Length: 320
Length: 77
Image (cartoon, each protein chain N blue to C red):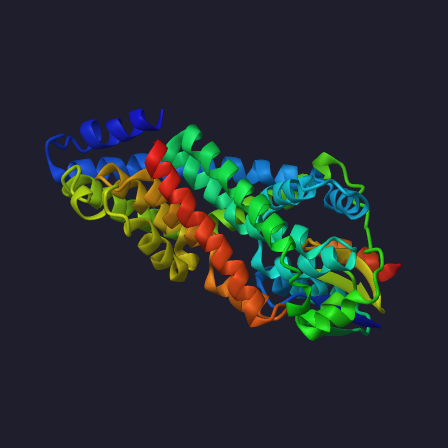
């Protein structure tokens, strides 16, 4: 449908020739912007609905009471995937989990997946790479959270929490649970406001990214990047991962650019590692975590997530 | 009456503070709004999500931006 609209605008209304680089770039820009805008509104609303009904309190209680032999990490990771990520909420949640008696490793599983599999990344992936790659991305993110959290739980890292956090943890008490008794109709304004807010926030970056992507798409020859960052370059994955760390604030703009790079010869595993690192290893997040964790724990946390992302990148380059 | 808005200073906390201000003005009651931005202080209220609204040391809402009307209802109670 979006292709038809883009075709109509570019070829019929503007009557541009399909042979020009600029036409190709413009067509790409119109097509991608339309598709992504639609998906942003749709998925953010859907996530808003899921979020309002998702029983965070119940899951937390479930995690508190059960010994699940490792499965609790998977559950925490899934919880991280469905809760909308907001960096300003991650610290209170982190402390809330620990105070409720959930072990640090399980809490970390949550904390790792929460930014990695977030609604905006999912929207852009769906819009740009399609369902298959999106599913692979989401499942990989959840697995990284599960496995890294499990691994970290074996290291006994509790002593590396900041002192005030340890102080807080001495009093383990039930969290205030507030019931939200509003029905679906009463919740619509809130969902709508949320969707509009997110849309306005990310759309300039998305359009910027799509514009740059469109130019790459129109002008760079297919396979151009293969010579520099092809599968045989073993440094490509770690370098992409490290390069991604400072890019957090522009995640919504970067994903559309990556698509064009993939089309021009960057392997999907390398691209995937780059994107996971953009959202999963963010400097603002590290600065926030500094308030609850000592440096050593932050370094361990970030390097284990980073290493998993790099391994995953190699793996996808190998199989896809 | 002392109203506390808990949150590290992100956009949603500012919005909640703004709505709270409006609610106070519309009801024309005397109340003081305090912003609590320190995580250690926020943690004392045992809220899982910010922003949160605390009226006279009681948590009335967390994890969402309340509308002016909602806040008025909290204040009337």
